[in-house]
Length: 106
Length: 119
View 1: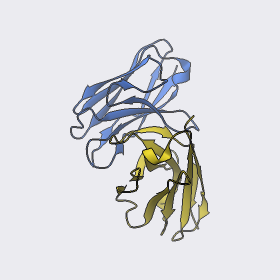
View 2: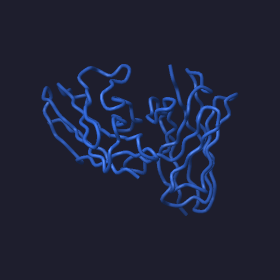
View 3: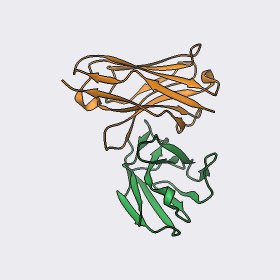
View 4: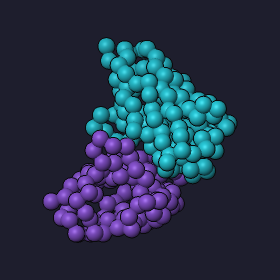
């Protein structure tokens, strides 16, 4: 199965720009998707197919990348963005998720 | 408004069975593939199983293959997960999630139902 690696945690100040990375163990083309999970809630789709904004998601969120390296960018970060962010691939075999990056605000 | 509401979770002993349900509303259920995805306490997400809109295609994670069965009743707008031979490592919050046809990403998720396997 394709392994997705994310850094475990980040801390930023409101108003800053933050990039969250996801590295795949093999190419996933552009079939990388991003989810936001706030404490006690279900995951919410943010970005699909690497760079497409899901319905209702603020334009502060954007995604980029192809092959094995992908990035989720939030600019500017707001207090409400405190959450864990997961990447997920759908190119190779069963869908797999990264371990998640916990975003904390200073 | 799309809604997915899971039910059927609880505490169960190892080796026993449990059946989860997910009632869908706000969209044409029979047009979409559906999935079960789980999250162990404090852990990440693990895809468990998927079923196509007409039940023609069914897939399982290796960790549950042979023990879990995904099914659906389009007349009742309901997705199911029959879980047998449960193990402690199956303890998790189980989400049902809709996937976009021919694309394996999940655009709507339920709130989840907890399954605890313990003696």
